[in-house]
Length: 190
Image 1: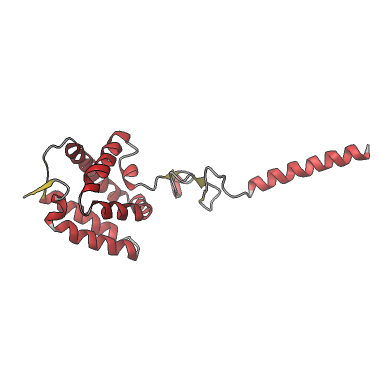
Image 2 (image 1 turned 90 degrees about the horizontal axis):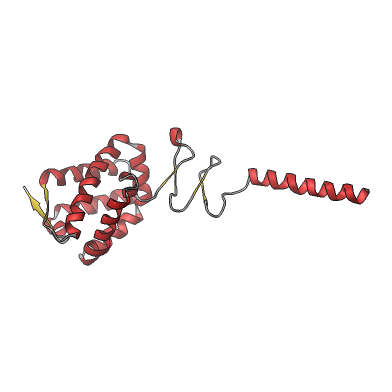
């Protein structure tokens, strides 16, 4: 009888320990990003959202956020990245900079609804131009579109850390140099 009670007590202690430890446990392996508020995010969506969106996780890819996960447009952009951009002299460095700052860019965009909407509009237009590039069609950008990209860069820079600010400044100077965009097969019109 005593042995049976000890066995039941041991099972009870293990059960209570399991429940209590799961309440205070770190994030599970498939959701390793600890948001610090009882929620965890997967590596595919490593940005913890707060406020009205608390408990939701966002992708670290700004374009995925902007295009609302539209896989058709994202596939077009990936193809452009993997073919056109990697063959241009500045393509690989631009790709590296994008991914280096992707998480911060996503956070900045998620914190400013007006900026998010402006960048979404530009991202959709870029996706259309990328489709034309992938089809070896003539692609052009007018000065107004280029100016809107530069204005967005300034708005992002205003909320960026020093490393991202420096990168944006460098990219803007490259972007203004017409040869950079034309390396990708895009003509600049007035």
